[in-house]
Image (tube, rainbow, N blue to C red; front, side):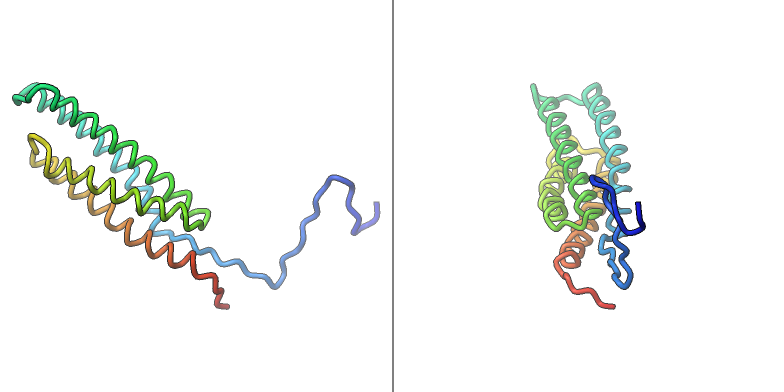
Length: 158
């Protein structure tokens, strides 16, 4: 077969000389999402252990402890979805994924505020854990909005 001809069913690579593709995904945002994934796993395990401790040592009204544990599991589900959409949206530079992450961040903030303020018993270690989680979520909202603006801007400055 002669040079320049391709077999049927194969693809040829087209050289991209002169074209520059700008990577617009945010490395600081991706690092925050990665670290928050590990921190939330730590947060979740600590909260489960604290619920075991509080259930054994503190008096609870009937079904209150179970409701608080269910809310913690709901927070874990929302947080897993939020981090998934944030990572995927940032890496693929899609506005919708990052936007879903920012919207789910509101639900996560309320879940963490429940742990911080509205539980039956709030321990000092829970205040510290929840404050760190709120810091992560707040920074991710800021970087998520910056990423949305960056992805929406299609101008390439060369």
